[in-house]
Image (cartoon, rainbow, N blue to C red; front, side, top):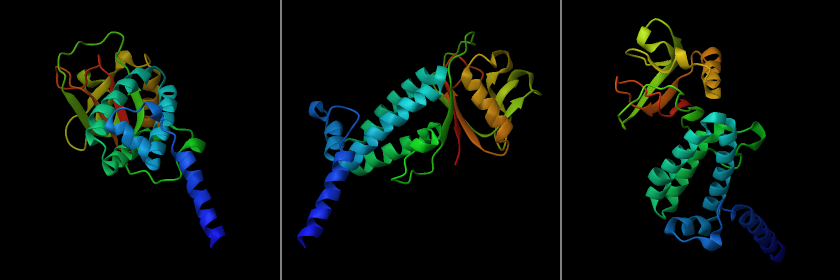
Length: 222
């Protein structure tokens, strides 16, 4: 009985030492959310893993890193912090964010100890173009469908998303292709995954399309 208890205690201790490693200093935790993360070994581990995923994603996205930084701040504000100290909600928020960034991780460093939910996986974060068409809207636009290199519509020539119904919408115009390393990520997806479905998210342009003076995010749909 003593050996069984001791073995169970050592396993628990090992898990706690591995899991109690949030990405911030728990000794300085002030908010209820930070304290909830530090008090829960699973949440603490998720926070540490997300910090690792986020750092790797910044490197993978190259010149799109600044877009991801802003997007991460929005996730903290609108997803994580909206949960308050509720563990179930925080768990769902962390797992969803990890799933979003999972495709940008090297194969050996992806999470294996928990199954991530099916979620849109980020493949590109396209920064504002160097000579954009100014937009005045702050509304967001999302379109889902197949990625194509449109050429038939003079106003939509470039990398575009073609929905099941309706016209395609370019999110990188021909004149701008090649200005960002993330354009190549889109070109590879068009060439290698013609039947896969993707979602493009960005800011609404004055003409109803994607504003190219703002960041645009491309996700592979599950």
